[in-house]
Image (cartoon, rainbow, N blue to C red; front, side):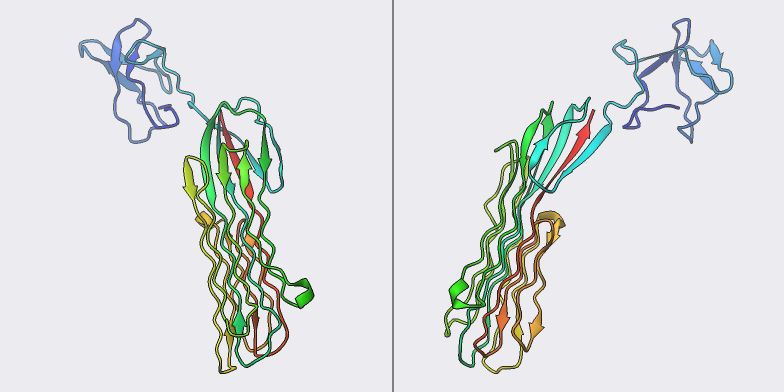
Length: 288
């Protein structure tokens, strides 16, 4: 028996003479029962094979429409900034924005017997909203934050935060993750991970995961990079935190909004760079 997209049946069925009839339960809703019976059982009505009553009405007397009330019309993905133009017939749009991941922290070239590590960048936030009667609007994609630079003192720079991803200005906003701390002091061995960005704007607003601090020792055995934070809802993951007995650069974030991993050094004068955070994204599902 035909149903609407939620699996509901008509409230009332009448035959071609206007007599109300009641439904006969069927184990398979795809097959309409061959016999239906009026409320007054003195007047049975038998339908021909695969036939359907002439008229279907709701309880308020309006004609029943078995077609779905809404349907998926399209899906658009924005990995770069641009203009969203709704597909013809779109009445509702479900918009999901993911902010950029923060960059991982550097380690400056330092002497001494202490191992040094930066902190991983934080993951991007996620915001989502249902938009009624959408129109053409601007989409801005938040860039991933740059990893800190510590290979030489001349190029020394701190990691930057990921950018915000927005739909129509301030209607839906997902903020980026913060950059991880770098290490530039011979006595300060470990950098803190980046903090998640501020809560964004939308019907649903989630912050990304914070970056992880690295780990170093004074024994000269192993050093551990700080892992980057994941984007909210698993859209992206942080650059992994490697364990090593040599100087290593941080790993880049992966997916959408993953934070960059931090650099790490082993008791020598070679600086290293943090990994970059990954860019955000905007996803739009369109419905009739």
